[in-house]
Image (cartoon, rainbow, N blue to C red; front, side, top):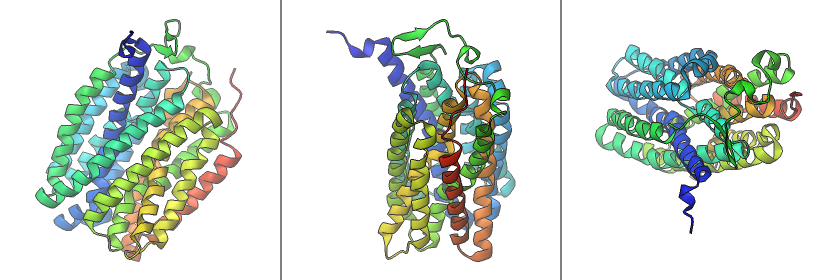
Length: 411
């Protein structure tokens, strides 16, 4: 009887999914678990204004924005494996600097270094790897990849609470540094295969690069309204979807929920929503297209924001509903734009176009948390920031229904 694990297509599938899943977890789940779960604890411990401390994530997104602008060129010149290793190294170094931080300049340096890793070793790179290895079912594969990363986040969030409570927040960042280093080696081993395009029947040796794949160049895409609306949507995604995910744990603690409840209950329910949302969105993309399928995470994000606005400590179930909805929508900042690009513009110049789109996500994300915390310090509540995010998610839904569900013509 043939061993299915010896089938080259099956080996390519499970290695790609597992390697990309760990990569996405490190990029989003692990690093944002350490940051958004510990922001209150770190600022209280060091006596730093929360808006000033969260500028470190602004530095992360600014660095990621600059790298994203040349992401396509870096991939073309250095190749995916080199970009992957540089990104993982920067991620580990950034987490270690966070563990040693006691002043704002050190935290800002950590955010900047971490941002390089965020741009080079995260979902956009995972999407390129999947696009280069599979011709069909890419949405489902990326959904599964991101969902597995959400599972890792659900398992890690309680560890954040336990370590922070027992040994302090620095121990969490040291643990994160070790995990990035160890799992980074595993990722490189799983994804070190060549970059040939593959489909269900094996690798197609005639397709050597993205330039030979169907699709539009970046210059051709820029002549379509979908391109500019996608950039605007990406900006709103960074402010609203990233912002709601980042500030919700602080909002919940500010509303009277304990750190232990936030890290154990909400810290699990948000990733569970994330897992389910990414699976549903990925599978729906293959059937409906990324435009229509995007209504699912954005709709859930809006419901989560509304629940966050009305929740109270005595009604903890509403906080869980809010966390699931916001977690459901966290596929928006990374998975949705990535699949939108390949769905709307094809694979010919996907790395370049995706770099531009993710750069706009970074701009919005860079402003989201400091703006929310500045509003908090002025208003004494996160409610105004959550209302702004709800309005922007509504705008995203409108653009999704009108412009982004229509594909431009591809020769």
